[in-house]
Length: 284
Image 1: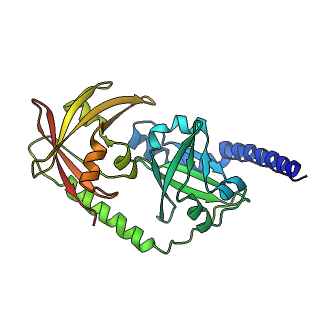
Image 2: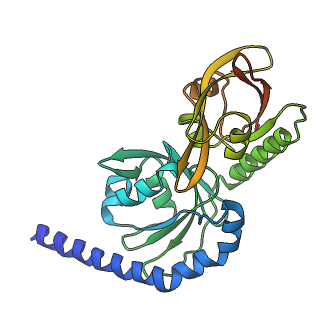
Image 3: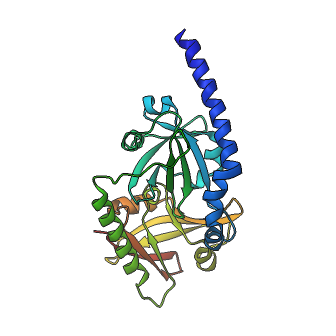
């Protein structure tokens, strides 16, 4: 009997998902996404910011994990690292670890705290929009009546604000760094510390290597210590992306880089090996 009831409930949720999908396509999706289309086009050269929604089911609350299905995970793989940061409309930030299994991605550590804080129930749904930095998503939450919730402040909201201010100040200092050499400022995001440092592809194309190529480089700090790494440019969704990998995570760990810190990468040498002098600006 319980199994039969469970099947009926799953069927009801599938039907609800289809209704919500139609609703998004015909009404709400247009209102949420098209309103910011001009901003997206200007910031992404015509490529829309990745957006998707998820309906909350009991399993996500019972198991403590929210599944992002395979087709979404595959399309937006470049925006999903080992962790993500969700930000609600009031600015509260929720770091979460990701788990990969059978082609899907799961919001794991941090998800249950997020769900409990916003009192999520089966039938609620969440609209995700990529924020423009790696593995960061703006979220909007709707109840079972398709009404957007009132967002409470986290008890640590002041700490979140302080964290963002510190990161903004660090990034500002990095951007103000002056050099006669080519230089690039980068703000640390969660996935940058775990997967590799993303760079401006135009900068890399002009100064390091072309799309589809990889080049060995050195990372150096002002005291002269160096680390070997690689820089590559690749094409994804008709857009160029550049990354320092194969050595970057070791550099980040040994220099105790944290989310919110910023780096000014100064290209000081091209031969015999291209060398970045890395100036670190701490968020705190």
